[in-house]
Length: 265
Image 1 (cartoon, rainbow, N blue to C red):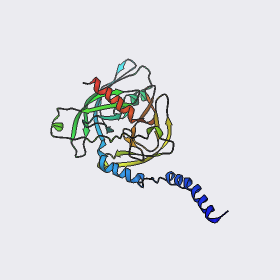
Image 2: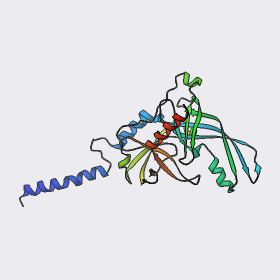
Image 3: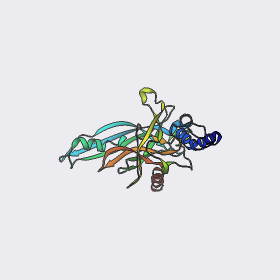
């Protein structure tokens, strides 16, 4: 075979392999690597994740006896999903019911949780009073909303909701795809914003869509390599108890949020 023809043949047939190699190693054909996208994400949208503080009064009854009520203060991460501060959390991070029942191991036990204080903790240290709008035990979701007539809101507190885009890769997400979660450290580390890189272990389609993703934290938003919001991390519930950590797709979160708003108008 002519050397020029052989060279052309080799170059043409090697091109698909080269493109595959570039994509599989994380190189974007647009010239923008995911690290750049993710760093930009945390620079512009770090405050879409916030700490939420709740104070709960817990009343437990078991074996026909009522235990003395106890008060607990809990903090958990949530994802801000709208400009008015509507925030979604993993219910089990702010509701000790399932944890208490698992320790009691008494099918007749009863746990009542009353929320006496809910606060959204802002970056500057401001504590914004909020109310619990909905607890969805089956999906492990809790929605909290700032109290509109609070002094803090009147003083011009602004919330930074999770960024959304029309384009979506949720339907094409595959096993081993890299993703990232935006999170925050605890109070002892000054609530510093962080990125946690993870990867998809499984995509569950039925009976409800979930992503099983490694190295993520409850209540935090997950983003694709293109910076698209994929969902929020919650527990997969089984008979009222946590059975695994999953990511509930953002479409489901927003649909439930609309239902929450319609019920509370």
